[in-house]
Image (cartoon, rainbow, N blue to C red; front, top):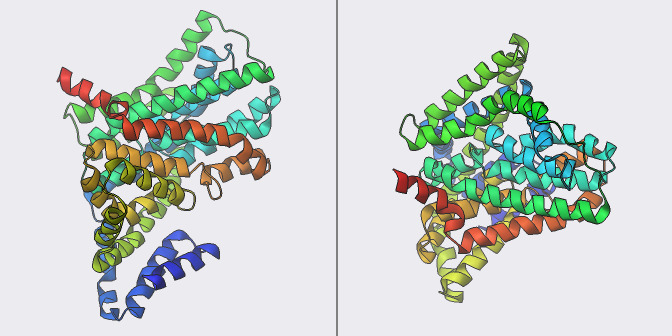
Length: 426
């Protein structure tokens, strides 16, 4: 496997897109290991990786998020959050966290969340006197919720690869998302009191009512998805189609959607979806190579040679996933490690849904973790602040996310309480 990891590392270091690095590394390994004839099967392996009906949810949920964003929902969410807590300690910094939580239930993508909210909230916080580097870090780390709160694209990918119920994973993602939001809100309020950040004027109940009425239809989307899937009204794929139809109707009701904007959303969703599915196809080559060489079983055996204590195995697994998250994006991590992860699941005997949320949370926290956290680069570009200053401000925020990760790993109810509650009422 040295040829694969060597070529893969060199290509990443030289700036080659990760999809090509994965594919070329896998092909090079087959060639140098004397398995060149197996390269004839690689196109089939690539197609098998994306030829799954459930993957239709990805372009559909992305399109729904795009339609909501260009339909003015992002602005309405910020106004709604400001009317709720803008006058409380923390001011716009608390509004940022709350807006991120709301937007996560619509976009399904951490990067989309950081881009959309960053362009609105970072300049607003800077004008209010909040340090721009802190504002950028808060937006970037808060966007982690976009990868864990349904309808998360990362959750869908994990469900497809592991065979775990996407509906159950969606329900289990809500609790950790709320815990992250509460932790970040507490930090934002403490930081605001310490540094004397200003707050916005308290709005009247009439103004709050108007902003609620204008925003509430958009906030119903995640509820419709969760209830519809859990009640058996529609499948996860059908839920994605419902989300697109709902987003279109809401945009037309708000009178913010035009033919040109809908076309722009379709084009943008197609580009983003193609990138995700291309990575999925290329990473399937690596999964094939790993399976061919028995890498998952070898790693599991190596871990057991160190210790068979489930808690120690769990700690090692989380550390490895966090380190991988610093360099790779979540979808690549999941596809590369899934055969190995399933071996770890057998070793520690954790609930499959709880295990999935723990793995996903590791991967999405990595998006906000230096040195290659994509969310930090996004807010760096939006804010114009030095990356080093943003990283310094992001460290305590990332620590809060890691505390939530520890709770998810060690306390089953931190992620499964909603699933259990729904099951009890059903």
